Figure 1 (tube, rainbow, N blue to C red):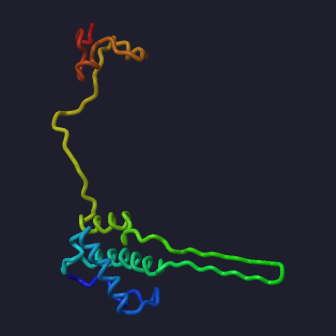
Figure 2: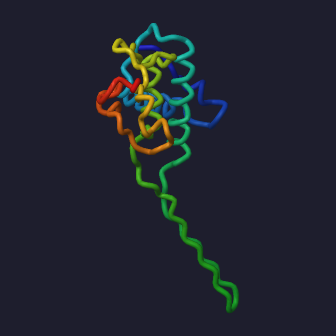
Length: 161
């Protein structure tokens, strides 16, 4: 398995104990490889590895910033005045990787590029040819030669009356 992310990659962004950082990296890598198996391969394209590193580093830093959470209560009383504050920054732990990050990691494994679905029209695809005397040719919003039913030429008459 390639080392996409190391504790040294996090050092410029946050002060995290190297042991804790490695545990966090192991967790995020385990989840990432389940979602995008190509990330565990040793021969991952360097550009894809850099993109994956950016996504995974963001997830680890977000997890680190979330902290443990907790409740703090501060009360001050001075004379007849009272001031009270209560903080609750405990956020429930959800999935380590957001759905958008999982989609980005999966896109890295699918190759991306400009490959798209395509097809050739082997049946020809000309437009409908109405008769010269068809009401559509005279500005109407309806066809009275039957060409809309055949998909090609007029159903009634040859168009040259």
